[in-house]
Length: 368
Image (cartoon, rainbow, N blue to C red; front, top):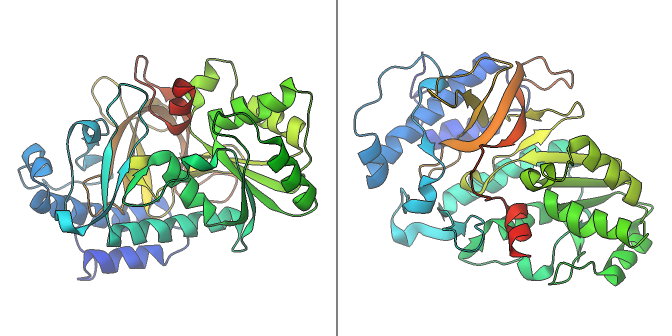
């Protein structure tokens, strides 16, 4: 049975305690209690502080045995409603999700506390894969996309989030998405014999970097590079490019053997599900996933595909702690991945048919 409080600690105290634990060493049964307690507290908080959320869930939550019994919102609601649980003068920034021309972007309202927790969590997760040393960084995007301030789009936020792990930032693309060969060549000449970080959104890495190298008969050599990428798989799948093909193409054109995909979204910034060496995405201690049947929304058993519900302990300034996405995925196991990480591990198979493009890479593809 999930309980709202643990050892009489407040929500911030519980969250800090969970953040203090190892990212991937919490067994699922123990996570159910610790994370479930935080999610119950967030549900109560948003009922009290967000009028729209309280209208959707006006009644006290009945006792639930596990996190699958928690309320959730359809992620599309953030395109239709201004959902926030803090006063207007407490909003530090408004994050807009990507939307292609004519679509309404989602709006995510962040206060200082939520933003700090998101940054702290992202650092803990990525340090598991990158270490603590800041590396020379090649960004597969144009510098104009790197915005800052109170208004921030998801593409810019993704770049900002990863940029803190790098130094000597170099942008690989011009404003028209053509490769900036001078900048790329200079970066490679300076750093080809050392560890480097490369980041880009999946479709953009393939379309504007890897394919550009192939089409011009070029190649670069970054054998110690580590590429992180996310989003845009729907567009690539239409071109018959799967995860294995993507990695093979990257290595053939760049010499990069370390390629890590991750799953995340603007509506839960700071919560990312990283890919392990066996090709599975892993839920960190502060987050989890549930697969739901596409017809009756019941929880799918391990091994069965369903709609992905993402859970995160971080969204305090807006009711985004439990979201039903429009993505399809499969949980493959719990606590027993060969990589050694505890908790659920899963894969993403794509979007529901006839669902609009909405990822950062998809947006760039539609705009171009």
